[in-house]
Length: 91
Image 1 (cartoon, helix red, strand yellow):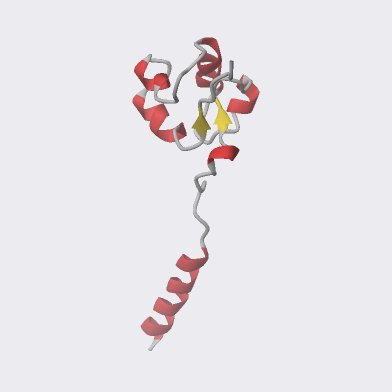
Image 2 (cartoon, one colour):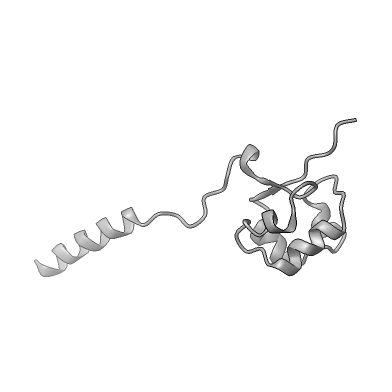
């Protein structure tokens, strides 16, 4: 009986734990072509070193350029890819 009650309690707790960092909608993502280094630091998993590299090596056609051009490592890219976007200037 005690095991059954404990199971129900633990199940209820697991259902109320929020997900860490839900992926934001496209319009809420940080633009790697226009954001400052300070704004880029709002991205989960971003460090000041990586933020400064992103700013230094602009512009980008897509966020994949961060990886393709060696601006960030694959590990860093995997952490930030869902939180950034690369808007191009409209000419």
